[in-house]
Length: 85
Image (cartoon, rainbow, N blue to C red):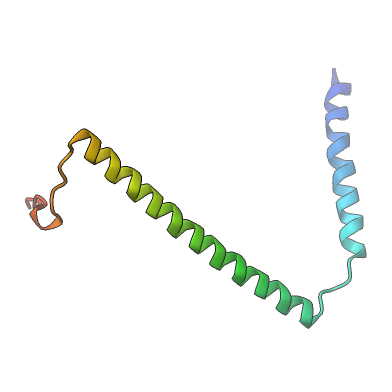
């Protein structure tokens, strides 16, 4: 019964070997490549931020429509119950 366990490990070892060989052959990044990567990261972060803002606006619209349809009245933030000490 040890043979099946061994054969489950072989694909993992092969993948690790191939990744190691591929990584070893890659040249180091130049300064221009590093700057380009940083610029790409900044653009991706900005796009993610805009997408999140759009998602939040959509969620607010859905909540507002749900509350309007169900007749739910929202309490003002100033009339929130105070915690007792």
